[in-house]
Length: 350
Image 1 (cartoon, rainbow, N blue to C red):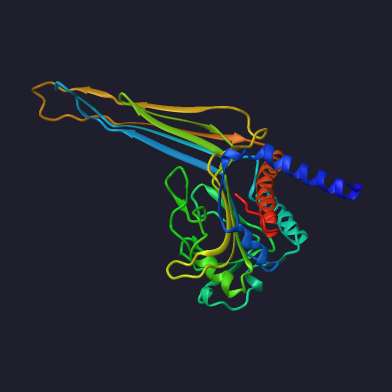
Image 2: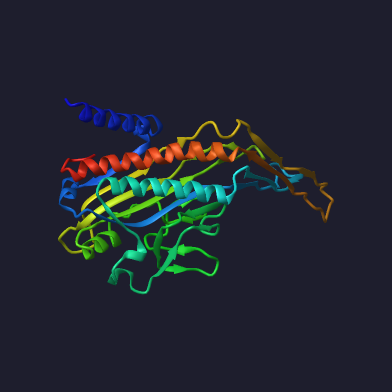
């Protein structure tokens, strides 16, 4: 083996070891369809979405309901616990810079693989996007998912079907996906292998179509109730949460829902912790139902409800947050590109 070839093999091994350490295999679910067909695709890729959600605040509420007690003679009121936790030390400009770097490195990797990279501004007129608008980064949206900032990188443009009055963007797909603590949803984390993407790829002569969506939660909240008590525990837990990277090419023949000629999709099914950013700490709020004794002769009485609220912050250094999040997200992106590279060579990838 020549020195140059040996060096190349060593570099590939080093890249693999990095993401293998950061992204455990059991944390990734891979959906693949006829990956050998990627070898016939043109070296052109349209990136439909590239967005990162960073959780900045989380809130939870738990209530246990009162009423007349067994046996009579007493009543209890409701007991409600509320806990809110916010992130301090990292600001929107830090998150924009981090997202810009992740995107720039991702694009460079694709170009090094020989791809011509296309975003919305370079798209030809396609029937599939008739009536849609185009948005451009850098862009930060705090309305898309309550408690999180959705960050779009500089130099990236993307198609939106609609922007609501309150600022939420619709980019097509199903209205399910990422949930925040309060039950809010973002539609970026369900599979996009079927439907729009194969149609777009076919209209672009089977060029690859990619979607990248990543969530970085910072906080955990655990609301519970037991024996008349509402309790919430919470604290820092920085992690790669729900995430999805999709690559498809072409549209398979047949009627019904459009399906791809080749597809790879990587989703995170088990959170990947991101250490060395937040100190370990835990917050707790407890509310217990109050009991009121009611004499049998009473014709009127009141029952007291109880609410206990707590607000806390978790602190970090912006540089540490950027560096550690970048490591894990870049490892996830690199993993997807490595498997795509193998598929482009005609290998069967699982």
